[in-house]
Image 1 (cartoon, one colour):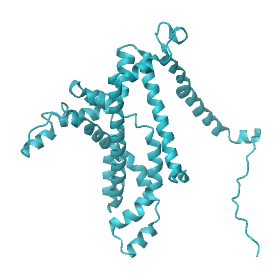
Image 2 (tube, rainbow, N blue to C red):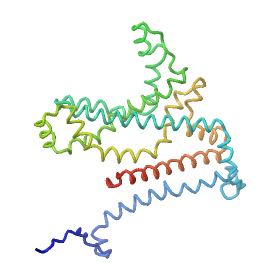
Image 3 (spheres, one colour):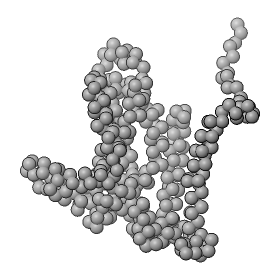
Image 4 (spheres, helix red, strand yellow):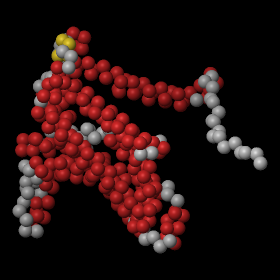
Length: 313
């Protein structure tokens, strides 16, 4: 018997000719526009990183400021406030990532289990509306709800509990930030998981039901394994944003009483770069954050390859 050729069929090569350019010129124009946008707004500003190695003064500019090498980086890692800000940024970044990820997946699964289409649409619409609110509004609502006369302390009073000054106790601050991110982004983040759930073959659920699986059994053995590729892709994409723990929430809700747990690298950069007019130190802090983010992405990709998750891509 003749052996069948099982080698993968290579797609035909498209020659870059004048005719092909004329046929696809609208796509090329749009591609060049996005390419130019990336170069202008993402790569050209990187030239400003040279400020981290200079004693930069606006009046002298980049070309005439004194070169000082790594002095600003040495100052950063000898500054106890910066080390504290690294700890706060990492802690809140990891907490926000875990909380928003878990809650978005749980919410998408629970929403999928609703039988009423109308009820599902209403709940989904209400859940992702906070995404379109600015952090100023969100923090304002949180501040009013958690203030001494807010609804949370009123409920505690009805339950016979003493009121809590949430914004004077450092132990509550990270939880407040995580709750703010969960409330604002859970509904929006759940959309992609809902889309992934709708692509699951209904025959799998029918077969599981015939085998005696209940709702939890179908979620455990069908829904969650089917969501695994989506979860891994989004997780790898968001790991690099761990040091982007936030700025608005911490800056607005923070105060002197919780300063040691509320300040982040972004606030440190603002304090030195704008308030103290030390643009070089602020730039050095920003470079450090970018370098750590790149390292986290590389580590995540390495782990994905070692665990066999690279085949998802």
